[in-house]
Structure formats: structure tokens, C-alpha cells
Image 1 (cartoon, rainbow, N blue to C red):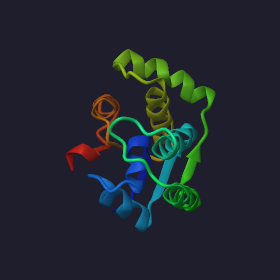
Image 2 (image 1 turned 120 degrees about the horizontal axis):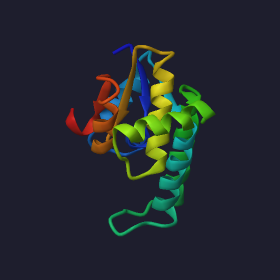
Image 3 (image 1 turned 45 degrees about the horizontal axis):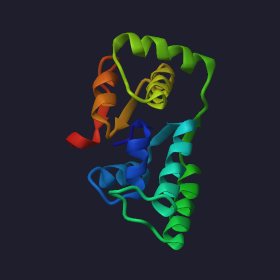
Length: 152
């Protein structure tokens, strides 16, 4: 499993939740792989942590301050081992090409897919990992190197 991987938010958060796909993401982190994520993914992850801690939604199980701090500590440690891709004009401009091929509800998902496509131009052995079926389907219009955690 020594490849390069680009994680969207739904895949990255599997690292912190014991749900389907968690073991796969843990395996990627525990082996010698290059892992990439788009910088805005960090904002989405911490937003999820805050939601679970301070602003739980109807189906959420609220977490304690201790659990919140542990999640943040684990994320901080993980960030030392992954490569952050900053949003650039090239990534923003790639969004138009993506939207010509299909629709994604969230603009941030369009940016994340754009970030993957631009990064894949450099890292040819890069796989896109997501747990979002719509994002997976659209990514497959650009490459077969897509792993949908909902289907493993």
C-alpha cells in the first residue's frame, strides 16, 4: 500500500471516528505513504470537532472537553505527517472544468477535488480517497484512481 493519497474531509475525519473506513485510513497513516489534503479541509475538521463538543446536532453524541482536547491533539500530531496543499489560483480555476463535468452541492468539495486534480499532475501515483458518493462519482470522471470508503 505504498502510494500517495489525497484525503477529502470525509476520509480524513475517519481517522478520528470509529466507523466504516476508519481502519483503512489508519492503515494509510501507519505505513510509508505520502498523504495530502487541501488546507480548507483543516477548517472543516475542526468545525466538526467543535460541533461535537459545543454545538451537537440532532444525531450527534456530544463529546466532553477531554475528548475534544484529545481529538485536537491527535489532529495536531497527524498534521506533522501529512502534506498540506494551499488553495491557489490554479486550483480555483480548475473548479470551472469540474463543474462542466458534474455538480457538487458544496463549493468546498469542488475546491478539494480541484486540489486533488492539480496535485495529481505532479504526483502521478496519487489516489483520491473520499466517503462521499457524489464526490467519488465526479472524481471518477477525471481518473480511475479513486477510493470510495463507502464501497470497501
